[in-house]
Amino acid sequence: MRGYVPGEQPQDDGWTKLNTNENPYPPSPKVVEAIQAAATGRLNIYPDATATEFREAAAELFGVTPDWILAGNGSDENLTILIRSFCDPGSQIVYPYPSYVLYESLAAIQGCSVSRLLLRADLSWDSSEAAELSEAARLVFVPNPNSPTGNLWSADELQQLLPRDGILVLDEAYADFADSPHSGELLREERFAQRMVVTRTFSKSYSLAGIRFGFSVADPELTGGMHKVRDSYNCDAVATAAATAAIRDQDWMLANRRKVLATRVRLATALAELGFNVTPSQANFIWCQHPSGRHQQIYEALKERKILVRFMQFAGVRAESGLDDGLRITVGTDEQTDLLLAALTTIMPEQT
Image (cartoon, rainbow, N blue to C red; front, side, top):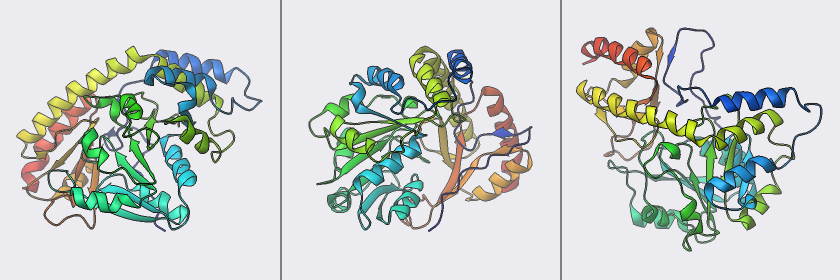
């Protein structure tokens, strides 16, 4: 199998890092206090195996009871748990493409087959193809908002992907940056009830990429089955304390969100003025393409200046979609954005 290749993580100083969609702003001070308290607490014993206090806080936010919530070591673990829970070797997994290719690596580990639902140039899919592929799928993964394109699919579009006897998984890593950030209502709609699982992460909107924590939200019958296959102590005491404090401080997260969204507008406008084709984003990053097609050269020229963005290539896309490659740029601080734009102003005449 081919393993998933994460974005570059340079360990030396001096980089403007806009390649892996971290939040450029620090987490809530209450998170730091919670980590300090946990670090001086009972680290010699196992943590709460089901992260009870966190599940209570997350359940309150989503308007459900705690038995809807399953905590994970980053939302990637929740994705792994989903495949363990619902797929046997040979089961079918479907996901829109291009999007988060980790799904293919996780499927390979479980011995599952994968079908790509190819996106069109306007980031829609063919409804008849969607129905055919999802009909027999055990899991359909949909990042919403999508990465790398940043678009958001509607509830009616998502309904087209409901499997007959499987589960629709909404991977909402970037949902807090969208216009409609909460999917709790969808989970209780009759058409999605007991047929959908939502996954969330603390790596993006809560500024906790360095603390591996995520969670899923689903009907208690589904969540109960998923609990059976998770590792017994999958979330450590420090990470659980940090996540609990973070999710309880919504005011801090929302203040950071407002700053990110304001900079996102400025960045998108400036990139368009530099000649890029910019896809409207509902996430904390922007997907852009230049008519020259010299995306790799632009990425390398930025890297020479210690500015990292994500150059992404996708094989097997629709020929007419134009989604074969491009640049995904994280929305950073205004200062980081200024550095990026100043560099691009110099670079672009060289590349066109």
